Image (cartoon, rainbow, N blue to C red; front, top):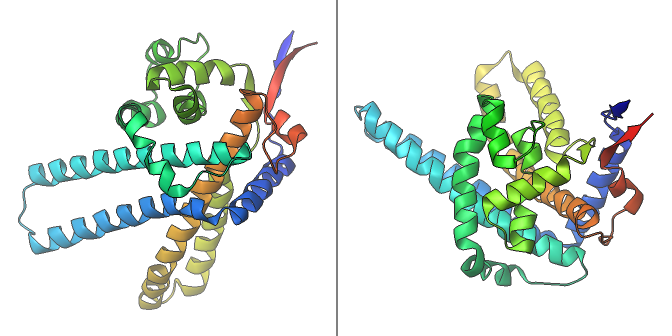
Length: 272
């Protein structure tokens, strides 16, 4: 009878995070991409709030139109920056040393793929995550009989698009086939960081919750810290994804990562 190992290995999770952090410390310029995305996001939010304050009588139709434009703009920028970051990380894990500036030249080759990926991920991907699309619709994308969550099916999508020059749908199908062979049982960097932020917010609420004015000041000071940590965690997450991709897909051992831990990143089905 087939059984699937699904237990989460916390030791491997932290070890992968540590390896990614060491790699990041040797390549701090990688943070420019997620940090730039965080700053653009913050700028758009502040601009939107300032615009609403200046024009309080603005109709809901125009507000929705403006929100939609900002949303898809951010989705496109996110896809472009994450695509560049993925390509640079993979090349550096292979022992090469491409510059950050040279990464922007990749847009000339992959701008259409990344733009379509941003559109797909921000529409269909959001629906698949939050509205739980019917199984047959997601299966039509991934061509898998067993339904996979969107984040799992798309796990290797960006590396495949950048390295294999695949279209978004081709990358999704290929990624789902790879993921379908095993269950990833290590916590993501974002999950680890989310746990940290939840704990930090609980402490802030506990110590400053009785004074609304002081709580507001602390939260305002906390926002820049949040943006910096979030951008670093996004870079670390992409480093882990790229390392697992190289190990699982290209059968290479990325520099600075334990091969045995990467091999355990996916629990295999086995006969008993």
